[in-house]
Length: 364
Ligand SMILES: Nc1nc2c(ncn2[C@@H]2O[C@H](COP(=O)(O)OP(=O)(O)OP(=O)(O)O)[C@@H](O)[C@H]2O)c(=O)[nH]1
Image (cartoon, rainbow, N blue to C red; front, side, top):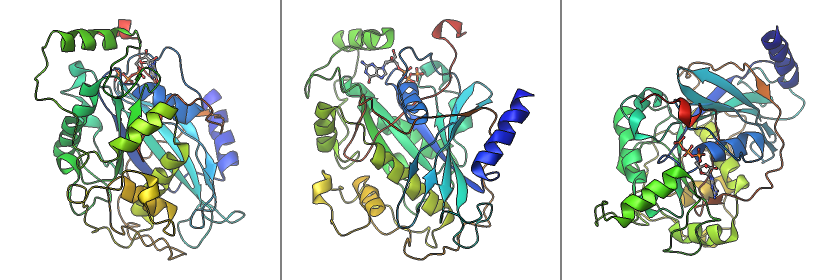
């Protein structure tokens, strides 16, 4: 009853079911703040006590305008699959006032942006690749106060590249061979006192990790990834000090994924991720270029992956089989004001939130 009512409201609110979706993995070591971040994105505020993630989540919502995407509305909802929490963003694409149920023409269109918050705990390592399916993009999250969590992003990238399947992939791989766009988010800026030092959030995972590092149990060779590998670290530190949450940067990332998935005629754009380091700051970018293109470059994916001046777009991927539809079960109203600057983007990268079980409920 409740569900049917919510579905009806959802349809009325959005003008029908979404006509497309992009899937974004949110990954990083346990305790870096993925769930907190997804919660912030989806609900507009952070959660004080996020339970540990088991599996995955989907939800979202936000509105913004660009010449290509006059109006995008993101609506978060939660869909439960197995033991995973998936956050989905519902997006309106196209001209206001026109029909929204078709990909043809320049009508307003609805899209889901699914944020798959994957548990970072080691105990789920063997089964988490179940969720690496039909991926359009990846959000890497690390803890600014724990260097190792940034180093391990390389392993996360390799794991996803090796075991995942991808939608609208790039022609050449990025970190670890990852063939889709990505962003990196440095979290816990509030406890990263200054570059090179480590703070503590007081939670058990952080305390344990710090203890292990103190005992010298980590390989000494573990260093932060090179800027060529995860570019923009300079901007990350700067952003961290200012405790900024680059919401707009995130929205650009989502828009770019939608364009690639549904409105790009050219999917074979080479990914120069490992070849040419991206500019360290946005000031280095061409001010005349498209904002989304700038983001793409800042995330080290240089080139021109989509022809965003070709409206109305004829989606090259129109005939592709979309990922399984995650129809909304519990639409959640979300504020559009992300006023809590707990998260900082890495030059062009950041985010996080989701649904989980309590840590105490986990059976090893
Ligand atoms: N100080 C501080 N603590 C944070 C921040 N973000 C998250 N936390 C805390 O860090 C702990 C872990 O956060 P989660 O969001 O559960 O981390 P996670 O990456 O989802 O962890 P897994 O579910 O184990 O993969 C929680 O106690 C959060 O409250 C932050 O920006 N600053």
